Image (cartoon, rainbow, N blue to C red; front, side, top):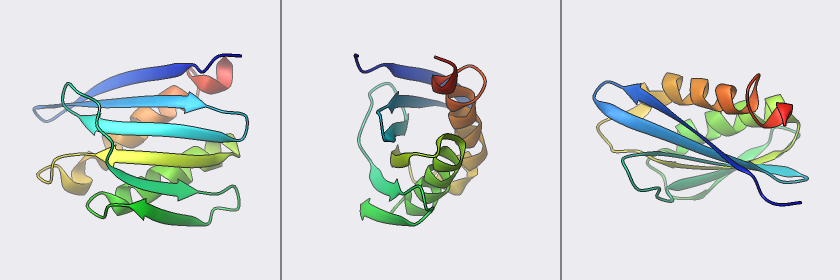
Length: 113
């Protein structure tokens, strides 16, 4: 079995947001970033019992925890989430990123493959 990375993009204001998700046997790894080049950002983990923690960084911590909770709820697996967004976007990008996550994991994403 190979590692399948699924990506999606969304426009928010004048920024291009990106998401990439890989599913492992016991976890989902999700990367969210703005701009052309993928970058590691604030790193959070959410366990299947919904406990969560911030592992690295602070700027997008709350957004990473929210995304992780949604991903874990949809998959029943541990989620490791990286968010790397400009400070100017702040939490305003939360809704488009949640929609990207649901698009990848929900109806047309990893749960169907």
